[in-house]
Length: 274
Image (cartoon, rainbow, N blue to C red; front, side):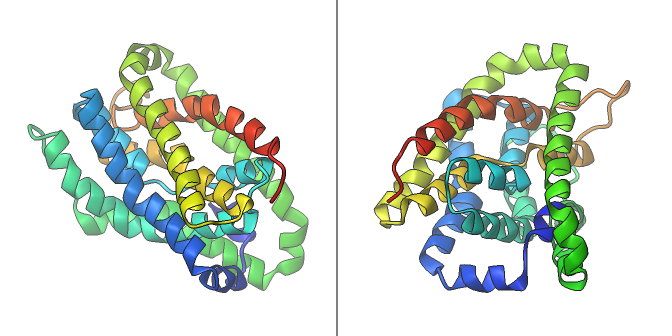
């Protein structure tokens, strides 16, 4: 998230505001429709308990620097993608506690989780919003340093993302395989539905191909690392470095999303720019 901030300037936000149609469409898809569709899928697939709440945590996470890279590979509008990710990161601190506060009693009626709005908001702010703001400040105060290190920082961020997901899966492989049949249909369906929804909204609003691609990737590509950490913060502490059930969906998603995003990239790269 710090790396994302390094790639931003205050002008990026003002340029995004000048394209209100594309900006509002993306924020509605990611902040409002994504949690609603995730909750609807949980009712369809019958997933219950802590795993279901873990899916809701994932649905509230913003995209990360990786979604911007995927947008670039898909020949999408990278500047718009960065604007989506940045604004979603700023809003997550407010939206995630609200969504979890509403859905947790429905998905876990027999348990009482610590989901006080202010403490959770501060934790999410520290995870997603503060690093972005810090990156913007560093880029503004030290532009030459930022120019030299931004690319390296981006590569490091993507490597850390891959290592966190891979490390979680290696250490929790038995748990992963045991829950794949439960989580796989819900997570794959969520990913495919959000990619399709992003493209449909773009077509409905007659957005250029590059903007529709960015909207689809941002709607369908969530930051699993933040989901893993948030789940570990609000869920039970387990012995022997075991991942809890609230974090598990985000870890599984980090792998399964590649099954959909790679074909999506190949498909979008094969479309002639319009």
